[in-house]
Length: 311
Ligand code: UT7
Picture 1 (cartoon, rainbow, N blue to C red):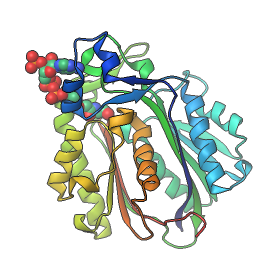
Picture 2: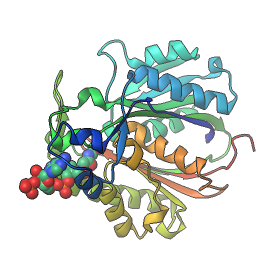
Picture 3: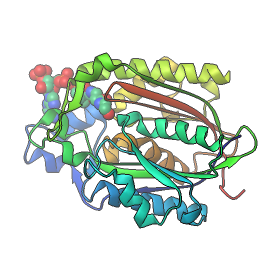
C-alpha cells in the first residue's frame, strides 16, 4: 500500500510587503536582503485557519473529491491561532471534512513530517488524507528586529492524498531532530522569534544535505536522477550551498522565497505547486522534498511524480 497525490492548492494573503516597505521602518536595505537571503517580498495577513482553509479548498476542488470523503486532515503549523483547540478543528469544520484532524508542529520540516505520517496511515487503512502546511509567521515576528523581520511571511499549501494498492509515489523518507540545538531558533510563549542566524545557517546546510543523502540512498537513487529538489525556502544561499554539496544544479531547485519569504511548513508545498504551475514536472520525474527548522528538525521525502491527478 502507498499514496497517490490527487490534488494540490496554495494560498497567500493579498497584502504584499516589499523590501522597500521594510526599508522605511528598519535599518536595512533591499540590496542587503536580496543578497543575503534572496527574498524580495512576503505576503502578510489573515489567520492560520483562513489560509489553511483557502489552500485546502483549492486542493480538494482540484482533486474533485467530496470533502466528507476525507478520513483525516493533518495541519502542519508552527503558528496556531490559539493554544486550544487545535487550529485543525476550525479548518476541518469550514471545509466540511470527514474523519479526524490534528495539528503537527515540527517547525519548517512540518510538511514533510505530515506527508510521511499520512503515507503510513494510507498504508494502514485510511483512504484519503488532506495534508496542509499553513503559517502566519508575521504574528511571531518582531517587526523592530532586522535580524528576523526581513525573513518571514505568511502562506499555505495543501495536498490531497489517496491510498493505492501498490508502492505509490513516496519512495523513501528520512525524519530527524537534534533537540540540543533548540535554543538557536525559538519563540517563547507570547514572545517573538529569536534566532542565531549564522548558527542556523551552518547547521541547515549540513542537515539538509545529510537528510537528502540518506533519503536518496534508501531508494538507491543518485542525485543526478533527481528532476527537482523542493527545499525549505529559508535562504537562497542555504539552498545553493546544499545543491553544490549534493551535486544538484541550482536550476533544479524549486524556488518561491523571492516572492513569499520563509513560510515555514507552507514553504515546500508553495514551491512544489509553483514548479507544477510552471510545467517543470512530468510523469515519473523524481522529486526530493527536504525541510529543516527549529528544534532542529529535518525531514526529506522522495516522490515519483505523476503528471495529472486524474491520469
Ligand atoms: O526556517 C528556519 C530557518 N532559518 C534560517 O534558515 C535562517 C538561517 N540564517 C540566515 O538565513 C542568515 O544567517 C541571515 C539571512 C539571517 C543573515 O545572513 P548572514 O549572512 O548570516 O548575516 P550575519 O548574521 O552574519 O550578519 C552580517 C551583518 C551584521 O553586521 P556586522 O556585525 O557585520 O556589522 C548584521 O548586523 O549584517 C547585519 N545585518 C543586517 N544588515 C542589514 C543583519 N540583519 C540585517 C538586515 N539588514 N536585515
